[in-house]
Amino acid sequence: MPEPLLFLPGMMCDARLFAPQIAAFSGTRAVQVAPMTGETVEDIAASVIANAPPHFALAGLSMGGIVAMEVLRQAPDMVTRLALLDTNPMAETPEVAAAREPQIALVKAGRLEDVMRDEMKPRYLAPGPKRIEVLNVVMEMAKSLGPDLFVTQSRALMRRPDQQETLRTADCPVLVLVGSHDTVCPVSRHEFMASIIPNATLEIIEDAGHLPTLEKPEETTAALDRWLHDRLLLS
Image (cartoon, rainbow, N blue to C red):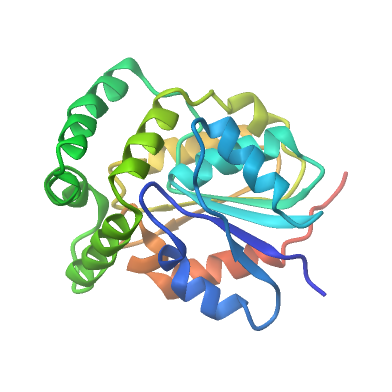
Protein backbone atom coordinates (compact mmCIF):
# COMPACT_ATOMS: atom_id res chain seq x y z
CA MET A 1 0.00 0.00 0.00
CA PRO A 2 1.49 3.41 -0.92
CA GLU A 3 2.28 5.80 1.90
CA PRO A 4 -0.50 8.24 2.85
CA LEU A 5 -0.42 11.67 1.24
CA LEU A 6 -0.85 14.67 3.53
CA PHE A 7 -1.66 18.09 2.04
CA LEU A 8 -1.08 21.40 3.83
CA PRO A 9 -3.06 24.30 2.31
CA GLY A 10 -1.98 27.91 1.94
CA MET A 11 -3.13 30.88 3.96
CA MET A 12 -6.92 31.14 4.17
CA CYS A 13 -7.31 27.95 2.15
CA ASP A 14 -8.66 24.49 2.95
CA ALA A 15 -9.07 21.15 1.20
CA ARG A 16 -10.70 22.86 -1.78
CA LEU A 17 -7.24 24.08 -2.78
CA PHE A 18 -6.30 20.48 -3.57
CA ALA A 19 -9.66 19.22 -4.81
CA PRO A 20 -8.36 18.01 -8.21
CA GLN A 21 -5.40 16.24 -6.60
CA ILE A 22 -7.54 14.63 -3.88
CA ALA A 23 -9.81 13.26 -6.59
CA ALA A 24 -6.83 11.96 -8.56
CA PHE A 25 -4.95 10.25 -5.72
CA SER A 26 -7.59 9.13 -3.23
CA GLY A 27 -8.36 5.99 -5.22
CA THR A 28 -4.89 4.56 -4.68
CA ARG A 29 -3.76 5.92 -1.29
CA ALA A 30 -5.06 7.57 1.86
CA VAL A 31 -5.22 11.34 1.37
CA GLN A 32 -5.55 13.83 4.22
CA VAL A 33 -5.65 17.63 4.49
CA ALA A 34 -4.47 19.08 7.80
CA PRO A 35 -5.99 22.23 9.29
CA MET A 36 -3.62 25.18 9.50
CA THR A 37 -4.41 26.34 13.01
CA GLY A 38 -1.95 27.41 15.70
CA GLU A 39 -0.31 30.51 17.08
CA THR A 40 3.05 29.89 15.39
CA VAL A 41 4.39 27.88 12.47
CA GLU A 42 6.06 25.61 15.00
CA ASP A 43 2.71 25.05 16.77
CA ILE A 44 0.92 24.28 13.52
CA ALA A 45 3.61 21.80 12.52
CA ALA A 46 3.48 20.09 15.92
CA SER A 47 -0.28 19.67 15.56
CA VAL A 48 0.14 18.22 12.08
CA ILE A 49 2.68 15.72 13.40
CA ALA A 50 0.50 14.74 16.35
CA ASN A 51 -2.39 13.86 14.05
CA ALA A 52 -0.42 12.35 11.18
CA PRO A 53 0.21 8.69 10.34
CA PRO A 54 3.63 7.27 11.31
CA HIS A 55 5.03 7.87 7.81
CA PHE A 56 3.61 10.00 5.02
CA ALA A 57 4.30 11.94 1.84
CA LEU A 58 3.91 15.65 2.59
CA ALA A 59 2.87 18.38 0.13
CA GLY A 60 2.37 22.02 1.11
CA LEU A 61 1.49 25.10 -0.92
CA SER A 62 2.51 28.62 0.10
CA MET A 63 1.97 28.81 3.89
CA GLY A 64 1.41 25.07 3.73
CA GLY A 65 4.90 24.70 2.30
CA ILE A 66 6.31 26.83 5.10
CA VAL A 67 4.65 24.55 7.65
CA ALA A 68 5.77 21.47 5.71
CA MET A 69 9.40 22.54 6.07
CA GLU A 70 8.89 22.89 9.81
CA VAL A 71 7.27 19.43 9.93
CA LEU A 72 10.38 18.08 8.20
CA ARG A 73 12.59 19.88 10.74
CA GLN A 74 10.65 18.51 13.71
CA ALA A 75 10.02 14.97 12.44
CA PRO A 76 12.31 14.10 9.52
CA ASP A 77 11.89 10.35 10.02
CA MET A 78 8.14 10.58 9.45
CA VAL A 79 8.32 12.35 6.07
CA THR A 80 8.97 9.90 3.23
CA ARG A 81 8.94 12.61 0.54
CA LEU A 82 8.29 16.33 0.42
CA ALA A 83 6.61 18.60 -2.15
CA LEU A 84 7.01 22.36 -1.79
CA LEU A 85 4.64 24.34 -3.99
CA ASP A 86 4.82 28.11 -4.49
CA THR A 87 6.42 28.77 -1.14
CA ASN A 88 9.33 30.45 0.63
CA PRO A 89 12.03 28.93 2.88
CA MET A 90 13.14 32.24 4.34
CA ALA A 91 12.04 34.15 7.41
CA GLU A 92 9.72 37.06 6.74
CA THR A 93 11.44 40.33 5.95
CA PRO A 94 10.62 43.38 8.09
CA GLU A 95 9.13 45.07 5.01
CA VAL A 96 6.67 42.25 4.32
CA ALA A 97 5.83 41.91 7.99
CA ALA A 98 5.06 45.62 8.19
CA ALA A 99 2.82 45.37 5.13
CA ARG A 100 0.68 42.79 6.92
CA GLU A 101 -0.32 45.22 9.67
CA PRO A 102 -2.74 47.31 7.55
CA GLN A 103 -4.33 44.08 6.28
CA ILE A 104 -4.78 42.81 9.83
CA ALA A 105 -6.34 46.11 10.87
CA LEU A 106 -8.82 45.99 8.00
CA VAL A 107 -9.76 42.39 8.71
CA LYS A 108 -10.30 43.16 12.40
CA ALA A 109 -12.61 45.96 11.25
CA GLY A 110 -14.77 43.49 9.38
CA ARG A 111 -13.29 43.92 5.92
CA LEU A 112 -11.87 40.46 5.19
CA GLU A 113 -13.50 40.31 1.78
CA ASP A 114 -12.03 43.69 0.85
CA VAL A 115 -8.55 42.52 1.78
CA MET A 116 -8.90 39.30 -0.19
CA ARG A 117 -10.39 41.03 -3.21
CA ASP A 118 -8.25 44.16 -3.41
CA GLU A 119 -4.88 43.25 -1.92
CA MET A 120 -4.38 39.52 -2.34
CA LYS A 121 -6.41 38.23 -5.27
CA PRO A 122 -4.82 40.45 -7.94
CA ARG A 123 -1.39 38.98 -7.09
CA TYR A 124 -2.40 35.34 -6.92
CA LEU A 125 -3.19 34.08 -10.39
CA ALA A 126 -2.00 34.06 -13.97
CA PRO A 127 -4.28 35.55 -16.64
CA GLY A 128 -6.49 33.04 -18.38
CA PRO A 129 -10.02 31.69 -18.79
CA LYS A 130 -10.10 30.00 -15.35
CA ARG A 131 -9.02 33.09 -13.42
CA ILE A 132 -12.46 34.22 -12.24
CA GLU A 133 -13.52 30.68 -11.36
CA VAL A 134 -10.42 30.12 -9.24
CA LEU A 135 -10.67 33.54 -7.62
CA ASN A 136 -14.23 32.73 -6.56
CA VAL A 137 -13.01 29.51 -4.92
CA VAL A 138 -10.31 31.48 -3.09
CA MET A 139 -12.89 33.97 -1.83
CA GLU A 140 -15.27 31.24 -0.66
CA MET A 141 -12.49 29.50 1.26
CA ALA A 142 -11.48 32.73 2.96
CA LYS A 143 -15.05 33.63 3.90
CA SER A 144 -15.69 30.20 5.40
CA LEU A 145 -12.45 30.21 7.41
CA GLY A 146 -13.12 33.68 8.80
CA PRO A 147 -11.26 36.77 10.05
CA ASP A 148 -9.83 35.28 13.24
CA LEU A 149 -7.85 32.71 11.28
CA PHE A 150 -6.59 35.42 8.93
CA VAL A 151 -5.13 37.32 11.87
CA THR A 152 -3.64 34.22 13.51
CA GLN A 153 -2.07 32.97 10.29
CA SER A 154 -0.68 36.42 9.49
CA ARG A 155 1.00 36.62 12.90
CA ALA A 156 2.41 33.10 12.50
CA LEU A 157 3.90 33.99 9.12
CA MET A 158 5.46 37.16 10.53
CA ARG A 159 7.34 35.11 13.15
CA ARG A 160 8.26 32.10 11.02
CA PRO A 161 11.78 30.64 11.17
CA ASP A 162 14.24 30.41 8.28
CA GLN A 163 14.31 26.86 6.92
CA GLN A 164 17.29 26.92 4.57
CA GLU A 165 19.32 24.60 6.79
CA THR A 166 16.38 22.21 7.03
CA LEU A 167 16.31 21.98 3.25
CA ARG A 168 20.07 21.52 2.95
CA THR A 169 19.85 18.40 5.11
CA ALA A 170 16.70 16.87 3.57
CA ASP A 171 17.33 13.25 2.63
CA CYS A 172 14.05 12.30 0.93
CA PRO A 173 12.82 12.97 -2.62
CA VAL A 174 11.76 16.63 -2.80
CA LEU A 175 9.60 18.27 -5.47
CA VAL A 176 9.94 22.04 -5.82
CA LEU A 177 7.04 23.29 -7.93
CA VAL A 178 6.02 26.80 -8.95
CA GLY A 179 3.69 28.52 -11.37
CA SER A 180 5.57 30.47 -14.01
CA HIS A 181 3.49 33.61 -13.28
CA ASP A 182 3.80 33.46 -9.48
CA THR A 183 4.68 36.94 -8.22
CA VAL A 184 4.09 36.11 -4.53
CA CYS A 185 6.78 33.39 -4.49
CA PRO A 186 8.61 33.77 -7.81
CA VAL A 187 10.37 31.18 -9.94
CA SER A 188 13.81 32.47 -8.93
CA ARG A 189 13.15 31.60 -5.30
CA HIS A 190 12.23 28.05 -6.25
CA GLU A 191 15.33 27.71 -8.39
CA PHE A 192 17.32 28.69 -5.32
CA MET A 193 15.44 26.18 -3.14
CA ALA A 194 16.08 23.40 -5.62
CA SER A 195 19.77 24.30 -5.72
CA ILE A 196 20.27 23.79 -1.97
CA ILE A 197 18.23 20.58 -1.58
CA PRO A 198 20.26 17.38 -2.18
CA ASN A 199 17.47 15.40 -3.88
CA ALA A 200 15.29 18.06 -5.46
CA THR A 201 13.36 18.11 -8.72
CA LEU A 202 12.22 21.51 -10.00
CA GLU A 203 8.94 21.72 -11.93
CA ILE A 204 7.69 25.01 -13.41
CA ILE A 205 4.00 24.98 -14.35
CA GLU A 206 3.46 27.23 -17.35
CA ASP A 207 0.52 29.66 -17.42
CA ALA A 208 -0.08 29.28 -13.68
CA GLY A 209 0.39 31.73 -10.83
CA HIS A 210 0.44 31.16 -7.09
CA LEU A 211 -2.22 28.43 -7.06
CA PRO A 212 -1.29 25.91 -9.77
CA THR A 213 -3.29 23.14 -8.07
CA LEU A 214 -6.44 24.94 -9.25
CA GLU A 215 -5.14 26.96 -12.19
CA LYS A 216 -3.44 24.05 -13.97
CA PRO A 217 -4.70 20.98 -12.12
CA GLU A 218 -3.78 18.36 -14.72
CA GLU A 219 -0.19 19.53 -15.05
CA THR A 220 0.22 19.91 -11.28
CA THR A 221 -1.27 16.50 -10.59
CA ALA A 222 1.04 14.92 -13.15
CA ALA A 223 4.08 16.51 -11.47
CA LEU A 224 2.91 15.27 -8.07
CA ASP A 225 2.35 11.79 -9.49
CA ARG A 226 5.92 11.69 -10.78
CA TRP A 227 7.15 12.78 -7.35
CA LEU A 228 5.07 10.14 -5.59
CA HIS A 229 6.71 7.46 -7.72
CA ASP A 230 10.25 8.86 -7.45
CA ARG A 231 12.81 6.58 -5.89
CA LEU A 232 15.80 8.13 -4.16
CA LEU A 233 19.04 6.95 -5.72
CA LEU A 234 21.60 6.32 -3.02
CA SER A 235 25.28 6.71 -3.90
